[in-house]
Each structure stands twice: as C-alpha cells, then as structure tokens.
Image (cartoon, rainbow, N blue to C red):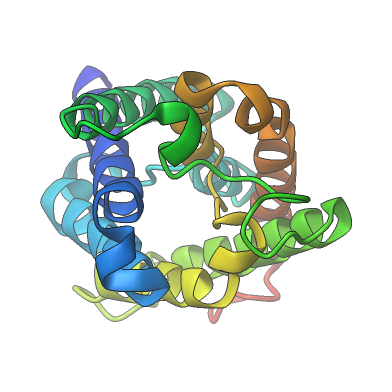
Length: 228
C-alpha cells in the first residue's frame, strides 16, 4: 500500500504541475487548446509511468467510482484520496516557486490555474452551470476510465484513452470552470491561492465526487459494462 500511495501522490503532482503549469507559465503562448493537451498528456504520462503500481487514479472522484463499482475498498479510497490531495498540494507549491521567479508574477493576480466560476472568472458562468458541467463531465470521464481499465478492454490503450478524454473535456469546458473533474486537482491550487478559489472549492469537491460515484454505480449495475 505505501508504494501505491506514493505513486498516487507523485502522479497527481505530475497532473497539477503539467496542467496548471501550462496555464500559469505558458497560457498566453499556447492558449486553451495547449492547456487542454497538457492536462491530457499529463494523464498519459502518469498512467503509463505509474499505472502498473497504483492504477494511476490521480483523482478522488475516480477512486470513489472504483469503490462504487466494487473494485476497491473504502479504506483504500481514503488512503488514495489523501495521497492525491497531498500530491496536488506539492505540485501547486512547486509551480508557485517556479512562477515566483518571474518579477511581475503575483499569486493573487496570476493565480495557480485554480478552478472557479461566476463574475470575474473566465466565461463568467453561474453556479448552476459549474455544478452541471463538473458533475456530468466527471460521470463521463469515470465511465470511460472504468471501461478502459476493465477486463474486456483492449490491453495497453487505457492511458491513451483516458488522457484524450480529459483533453477533450478541457477543450469543451475550460471557459466554464477551468475544468476540475478532480477534487485533488482543485484542492492544491485553491489552498495556496486562497480567497475566492478556496470559497469555490466545495463545488469542485461535491460535483466531481457525485459524478464519479454515479458512474461507479451505473457500471456496477451493468449498464456500461460489456460483460453484464
């Protein structure tokens, strides 16, 4: 179990550092498409590099979906979720230290790729849109993960399928919430940025966990399983 937790922490650090790092350090140069690809490629890297150790969930919503689908225990979920949040916080801290090396960087102004909604945040979508987007997209994301990692899936392609799905979700929704679909990914930047990012964090915990749990339940019932 310790090796699995280290893998989950390291993998989530990769996700935050690559994805949020692309937004903070290179956002003006690569745009939203580049940021979306960075998040997707981070998942691909972590999945193939660490997936054999822990499954590379890198996301409490994914781990909760696994619990509801009968693939892991509640105790394992708790350990994974804590490791993922710690990894995300370390990734955000490393990003802050790097970004702070630029003279005109300010965490209050430039942020750390934190999620949000409402007035002053990207497309200024409201709370209802944020909750719906995060819940539905997490449901779809976890559904893909459960299918791509199941016994009936083609071997060797899970990491690619999952990474491309996350990139696609970002292409659709960066302007809505910055895209979380992952409570840990939201937790790390929000803790260090504080203020509105921290106040909005509940949305990016509640909606993804609900979406992930529902995906696991639907999978367990057999609606999204080929062998059911």
